[in-house]
Length: 221
Image (cartoon, rainbow, N blue to C red; front, side, top):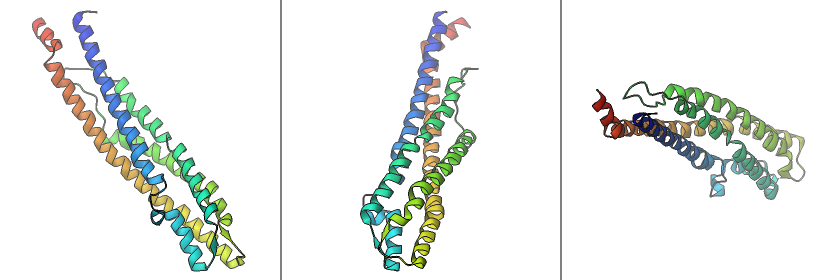
């Protein structure tokens, strides 16, 4: 390889590594900070929609709640979602990294691009798995445990009413709102990612234009 080829390869590799770092940091922040903030136990019990719904039904129906059991069930559910939600990292980083590894410089101003269309396709995959994950875990860890939350002698009507109402809440309102909030967090990070990769591309072109690579290429013309 000539000196020019070596310099070009080094410059392109540095650029690719910088973009990969942007993708990883952006995605890690999305999951570890943004999405986890929606799943983690809220700082105040009054902000906890899951516990709040259970307690409001119990108060209305004059039913006693086993708060320790309720806390255990909800905390365990959250822990499981926290572990499983990391699939977002795997999909997002894997798919976006293809743009980087497949990058071939065609001309002086060629850069790595991440588009809204590409992100939209990735988000469809994430959303599909997200819905499946929540449906399975809500059914297994919340709905199937409803009967263990309330204590005392419940009438058949009370038992049926509380079970139906909580099931509907978990499956519809709660799940829908959580998915919408997660998708919003993703869209915000998508915008940040597109901007960050674009800026890195501009920096790459500027550095290359003012580097020895450009100087050597100009002397050969």
